[in-house]
Length: 183
Image (cartoon, rainbow, N blue to C red; front, side, top):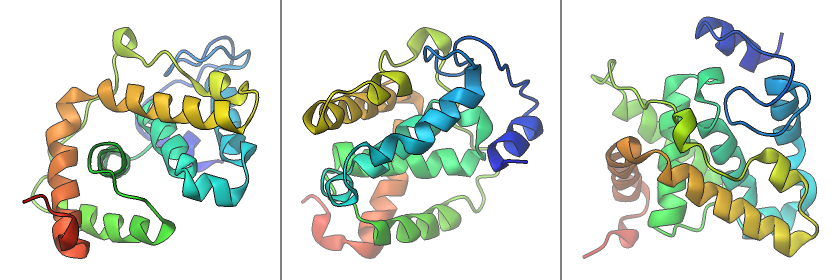
């Protein structure tokens, strides 16, 4: 069984296999499963080097995870929202090495915060851009633009989590990149 299905079961989410994605509203024929499968290949629409340089690899993963919180663990959601904050608000040029550093910060952050929870995006506040829009992009430029817009839409749809993300981001910068602290 795929991990996301295990997490969905743990969260008592009945996975619907027909029609739109039940979590993000993406125009799929086979629901959540198709949405997850589509997301799995989105990062390959551009070369790996371009994906790293333009950070679309990270933004796609974060945006999809945050629009599908019910199939991930809750601290995973903290990680993805904090990374979006670091990229979109703090303008950190992300790289793979930073992900393990951010995980370390989230592991420390969650101590004593067992009840903290970032609520999923409500159906009324869903981003307009979905995986199917990204998948339909026509060229690299269109893809990069759509991914960045999607990431901003997702971040904007989670205002209640911004203080949490900012706190984690601050701890990340303080611990690993004090040179990025604003005076």
